[in-house]
Image (cartoon, rainbow, N blue to C red; front, top):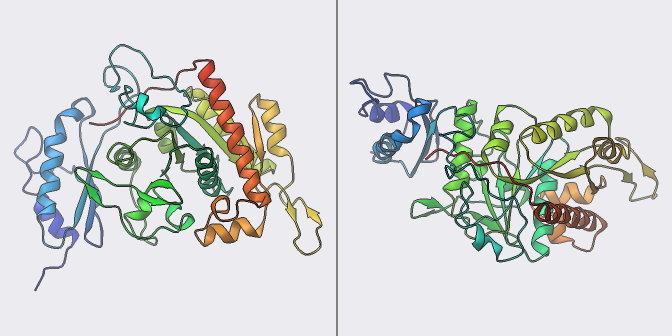
Length: 385
């Protein structure tokens, strides 16, 4: 009879791993985080001393192998967690102080970014879709913008960076789990997009009770340990808000630009300003604001209702001196297609809703082109080895 895979059995295996610079094991030293087990997959982190984080890959590998040898374990994800300041000797850059250029690349130009210092191999441009708060339709906007980018002939991927509330599996109707390809995970695919999300690795109803460092380590792995191939644009669906995870992500990834999503009412715009200010502080170009749920037109009588107000994001963009990318209406079509995993740009391309996303995507690409022409640098990436 096969033994049940439990946290205690995982801890028992990890107690055989000696801690760094001592004779105590890593469990006794308190270096192992909360352990998550889901259908044969085991997730945990090991805390390391930040200045010595590069030395501990062998320890991480030993812990992974010890757990992988347990009966009932199909896969193990072990991350090293350590707080590191961006830049400086530990930045993971090229040591010269040079920063990679945050330029927009036409199809095929991802080959030029393959060895970009600090970048994700093969990925030419990373675009964040963010919001100051949740519930404004950021993830729906991200996936439809990605599809609109693909319509331009670009190779596009989507990274669901919302560890606590991943949406991409449902929005794109993807089921199953990514497969191992060598020492990397193969991204899932739908509608011509390459996609990675924590939602593929953990059940939809399983809470991720992780502290910030473990979240950032997991995001780092989903970037560098995924076989993205060559992409012209990687759209990152950022977590909502402006906390530690969002700020660290913005500092660690060479973002070519950020799109801020807000609804029109003042309460949402207050938080959108915070998101915009965060990107400015870390020198990420803001491509513009999107007003989501902009207006509602009754499908029966045709009467227009500005349920959340109208024009707030346009006015805010003008006040803050950033581009206004466009409006997305509040319609049942977007809600239904999103819930059913059939995003409107892909499944109803002739609809007004799809045209709205297509127009926003075109303006965002235009901003990327202008940034390239101005040779604006993108922040340097900082990743754990």
